[in-house]
Length: 195
Image 1 (cartoon, helix red, strand yellow):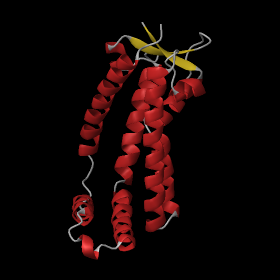
Image 2 (cartoon, one colour):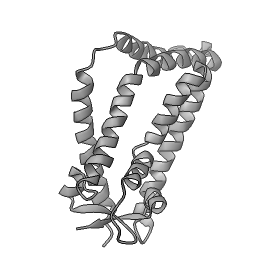
Image 3 (cartoon, helix red, strand yellow):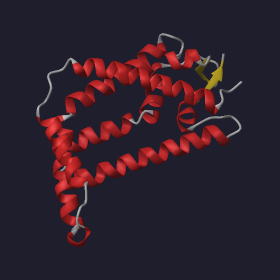
Image 4 (cartoon, one colour):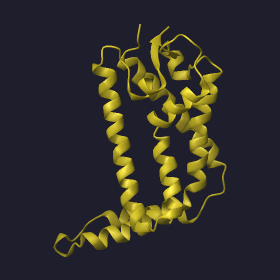
């Protein structure tokens, strides 16, 4: 029997909490980039609009773009490490546990191939790139090296919007399709089953 939305979502939440905990531990061991807190505060302060009468959208975007670009640039090592943690957990760890993560194990669900064959590591990788938004992370990491701040700012917001829309579509697919398959299940010819 295909796993319900509730079980899949519950497993997802538990897995995300585990990843956040592991990520915090590992990135906490890295030397702290002193620019990051300053840039985060600067971006937060700048995005607070205080005077709507003198508001200039182009100036606002341009200044925000410079700050966001600098912040994302400073966060590159952390982003790569967190991305590797996601891959390690959802791909490598799950592969050696018959596609079961800790969350999936607790909810007694697992990912299987439609044809009954063993799940391949590339199936788990493709699923992770889609569901966990790593495709967006990879695109944004690439863009930071080839675009100027203003273009980077606009395109990364677009890629993040596409990811949010894809998550909504994935949720509705699992909720309303009879077979409970989402986009990543269809692409990899897998499904999440109980048991």
